[in-house]
Image (tube, rainbow, N blue to C red):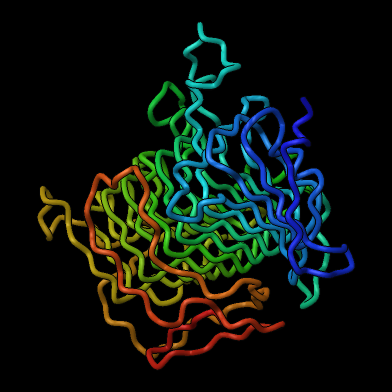
Length: 433
């Protein structure tokens, strides 16, 4: 039976150039989910009924800033554990976002594939048991100049109120000139199963990975062999427990990333950190980082063609607990303000022996923030969504570590402006506008 028969359309009031916007309600089975992605237009909503969707998916068309395309669970945030995308094993990516202005919300992406009806029951290989990358934003098209003067291949992606769990590799990846993405209020767990729990010999396993390592710039997965300038992305209010590598990792070439109000746990690579920025001008603030083999926050680390990446980042107002390598690890200089962080040492470490600051350059993470000049932020693309909720919704999977969540402040989303300039706070810290 054609899965298109499972796509009843409910038209809502949304007149536009494309006609009426549709809500496309689907149920699991066959290729129902991909069939819906094949026919959506800007402003449409794909609504997922409860059940398991054994499909690998790719978007086919762009939304617009005024009329984004929404993919959501029918039961809302509180019912997301009952709507589960599991992949099909035909691709290394389960949900592939390749176009502008998508909102992905209120369901689960689970890479545990043991129950796949098409899986070889005699195989227990890691690749057959676990999907690789769960949500992957990469356009495979030439970046173009957008209104405001920035270059983008995918603009305005929103991933919110999702549960993303059990990835062989990365849980969420933004790659090749992704701009204005907002990843917030998600529950992200168990990333990097291939390398950290199975027999892999790598270190792949990030919760949210932004950009492209310079070692992969010449990969055919990117449009061209140039730095991957992902710009103006916001990672906010997520619960992240990878049991793998960084909770959030920002690669060289990436600029102006805002990372705030996240809870990051169980990072198990002593060379990296709970949060890492090899990009420039990241603001890392008000996060709770706990139980890391590496640093709480690592900055810099790569020089490419004589250019040192990972400079002019700011790290303030974070809580770091049991970060075994060091609180911060600074590999390049200069940085912006690194100050007003609260550090709780591992139980077995004497304060005189602990490295509050590791790496090549010393920055005291505990010192008060002052009014000294901070690096000016570059132009940041205009965000496209309303101010989000900050607290991640509970899921059926309980956190293994209880920890306080930093109290959110009323100012959560940078104020949209075609050409952003930094606002200087009384203490001299810049914040995105």
